[in-house]
Image 1 (tube, one colour):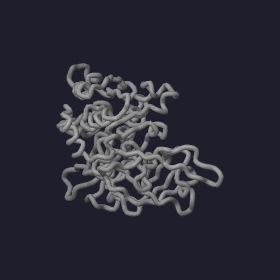
Image 2 (image 1 turned 90 degrees about the vertical axis):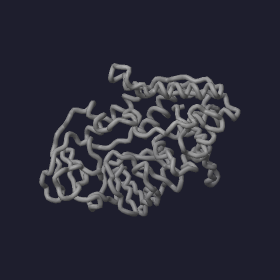
Image 3 (image 1 turned 90 degrees about the horizontal axis):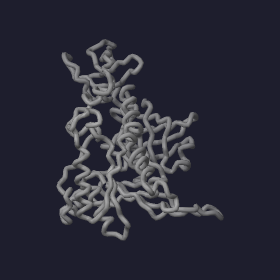
Image 4 (image 1 turned 45 degrees about the vertical axis):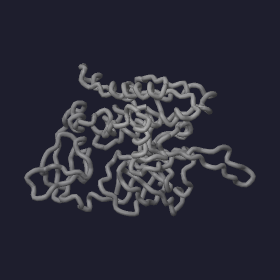
Length: 374
């Protein structure tokens, strides 16, 4: 439980079923760890709300401190990527490494194989799950059903993109109780049952930055300035300076003053520590058709769609950002093992480090980090 309304209603729905139920709250980040002061107690409010909801539902709850694991397995690797000029997605890695990783490792269900068959791990994600049917092949049959990660009913709140890196073994034990509900329905249930979190607003942004924090300023407290030129890609002339590649995202306004046109970030030259910009937000340099993903992780690890190894490739859907419409694409495995994802239409503002997630209809197949695009 996070302290939000979604996980609160998830607990409510499970409490109405025949489960031996308990709750756990993860403490992943506390700004006091860095500041050494009492300023920054965001997690304490969350933990208080979790306890209030659990008292209301008559559930035991505990706090598990995973701040060390989060630092080592999510924040530090992301920091190094930002410093190198790429754009990681910490929320995807948090689900894989912490919520469905370190947390399960610390709980009894991660340690006792005999109890895992009847033990489940529920979250408030807007996602769904189904089981594949056994498939007969000649005289043999697929030995057991396998879990499939699916989109939820509420497409506006769909969070399966952030779950696309979790393992099949974690998905096997996962429950998504609000996956069949819309957000307004979740709110209504919380109000009907007088849950303390019924009116709590949704959280936004990366957890360790905070809702009010400025991202560039936050990273600046961890990464020393590294000034370099801002170069007009069309003329090769320097039009400004930057204080670090991590302050810019592909496709955003570069905020270069004194020019006739707004300049937008088209490329980051890591070797030269330079930002390359072009005039206007619709310049052709901001669009691409092909995404190159060297290490794609399939949720069904050893059984990707066989068509990716054919000359024709597999016709699937791709997302390379959370808030975007899925795009038709053709996927082929290259001789070196990398995936080549060719999109049907031009894709704007694709940045190295972003997560490319593949779908077969509503079925999420897995994800990988974009190395380059063309």
